[in-house]
Length: 352
Ligand code: DNO
Image (cartoon, rainbow, N blue to C red; front, side):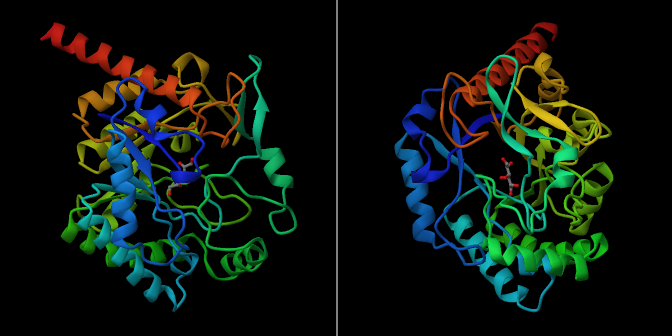
């Protein structure tokens, strides 16, 4: 596996130089943040980002995300022009030799939580999703935005968007729109050698009455069958899929890994707090509900050589920053995951 770290570009308070000092850190996961959603990314901007990352001694391993315009997800007639732009972006990423692109197909909202600074007993803060709180939230009247979102709409437009989905797009319709999109972009990705890796819905169930479909093993299987190509792959995110206790994340990772469809891994631990509720925790297995050692073991079994990143961390040691994306806890996460990997590797060599 190749250890990577998400970096939000020049507005990220964490300098690339600090990221490089994390032991075993090889790559950066980033994006172009100043191009409006739906427009094509110019090659020049991509090369500029790549150059910055390489000058810091790292590799630009993954683009996360190239956001998908809502008109594509809604299946509106205007989607074709946005799809054309998306194809252009993929071509330019190919020219810059970017190996992997992560994206998602969640209507209106990307990852969603009920609170971003929930205090844990040790004094650190973490992101939390409490179903009762979410049930009472009204995204139409309330303020709702998260720091990791790449949105294509203003707060005023959100209301109309939600209505449009409710009137016109149920789960089956969303599948149709996803299929249309995939069939238009994967041939381009194949041509220019860029692996596409869809991110699962976070959390993996419907929120605010909007459809969500990239949620479980059956649906991931349906997804990869939409277009049978190794370039039509997955980002396996432990915290997203693992939030549903019915999802056996390591088993899913093994299954799709053996099929050669896992192109990116997000490693995060969460603690189940009851039905549809969970809190994010430190990466260490004993701090949450997921077995991180088992995940690393599966990555060995499937001979995974692709990128992995420690996902959301808590805020610790007084750090102020982008919730989920501080330096310290994610750096601890990377060190821990690298430690598990080394131990498993040496253990296997000893047995052989
Ligand atoms: C949350 C991230 C997501 C992810 C997108 C991919 O922290 O995992 O925002 O970047 O869903 O498109």
